[in-house]
Each structure stands twice: as C-alpha cells, then as structure tokens.
Length: 306
Image (tube, rainbow, N blue to C red; front, top):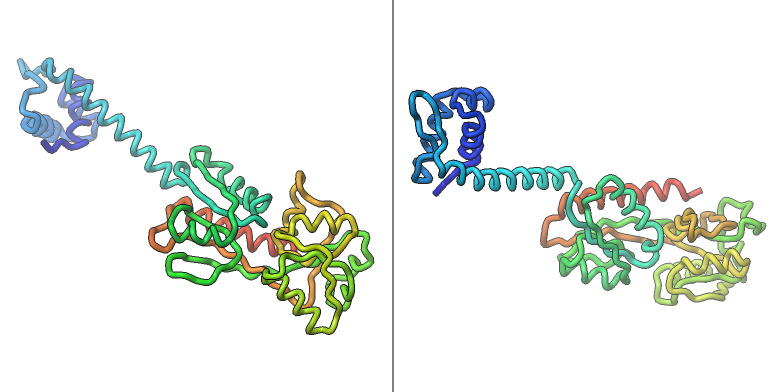
C-alpha cells in the first residue's frame, strides 16, 4: 500500500465538506482531479469511502473509521513539519559544549547564555574539563564543540585557533597603572603570580625576564589565572594573564574591582581553540554557536585591549 499525504488531505476535505466541488475549491484543485484522487485512494486501500447516489456523496462507515487514521497521520506530519522548521530556524535541538577551566566560570556561560536567549527549546550541556580531556571528548564525538587551550593538530578534530595577547594585572592604585605598556624592567624583582612551570605562558614569561636580564620572582604558582586576581587586588603581586581571565572582571558576581590591565612587553601569547569532531558534520546549532563564539572572542579582544 502506497498512500500519499495529498490523498489523505483530499479525503479529509471531501469528508468535511461533503462535496467534490467544494473540496476542490478549498484545495485549489479542479473537480476531476479531486474525483481522481479519491478514486485512486479507494483503489489503493481496497474499499469504497463514499457512496454516490443521485449526485450526492455519502461517507461509508469505513470512511469515518479511516478518517481517524488519516487525521492521526496528518497531525503527526504537521508536528514533524513544525519540528523540522524549528530545527532549521535554530529553535529546537541539543548542544553539548566542553570548556576548559579558564573560560568556564564567566566567558563561556556568558556567550552560551546570549546564544540561547531566544531559543527556549534548545537543551544545552556545558561541562568543565581540562584541555587534554576535551580533546579526547571531541575526537570521540562525545561533545559537539570544545573550547580549549590550543592543542597539536590531529585528523579527528577540526580546530579554529585564536592567538590572544596576555595582559599585566595590577591594583588600580599602583604607580605602574599610569603606564600604558608594562615591561620586564618595570617588574624587575617584583612579586609575580604565574601558572605552573610546564604551562606555555610560564615558559614565555620566565624567558622574557631572562632574555632581558631582569629578575623573575614567582611568589604564587597557580593552576588557573583567576585566583591570582584576588592576590593582585590585595597588592601581593602582579599577574600576567590571558584575556579571558581579564574578561571575567566584568562579571558582577565574581568580578574583581580595583584591578586594571595593561599591555606587556615582550608579548606573551595565550592561544585558545574551538574544536569540533572531524568525522561527522556539525549540526546547524553547533555551526551557529561556533560562529558566535568566534565573534565574541574577537569582540573581547577589541574591548579589553587598551
């Protein structure tokens, strides 16, 4: 049996109006085409739907029963059509995001919250993981998108890299706050907070002091930059940190007032990447969220860099 949606729609309209000609006017079809559609439907299902007596159509008992089935099919089709339209318009679906710790506290929730503001039917997962773990989650296709410190390229992952400039954080009352550019000479022998010794930003920072012949004094060793802002605020140290940590100072709940950020020379880089699985196509939701994330990274650079 090979029924069509057009046959079911025509049958429902003929039964509703009780007239081939009236159904044709409603559907925008000719009377012969409607008659042919009903005849074809009856031939397909193997029984009559209407008795034709003296120019009038009388539904058979089977027609009334069949109407329930036709209505169920058409209702399900309408629901499916609406769902597909919502998916196409980014109104329905699921988004799974894995984010490294530095961005998970404020930056990523801010970006994701803005993206979902007008999409109430989209469900989202946002999980904080280390950059190495996120690589594996994306490579194994367990998450739609990852935001991490830049990894080495691999065939199982598509990645878009962003080279972010690190800034020097200091109390707003510090004499160095009057300067627009801070150098190793300014921080010669000053207390610093840095990440752990294997991290690329630590290696770059320590090398910058060594190459300029200045004294590098690490007082605090951190896993992420964010706690260092509290030490800076207390006047205990300076912090050469990534832009995302600087952005967190905009958070009204977790922001750290009384801190200013200045550019640092020589330039220290902190590279981040948007990762997506390479062995399956990204959903429309993932594609659009990835583009918003990239746009917000560029906007963050423009807004924070003095």
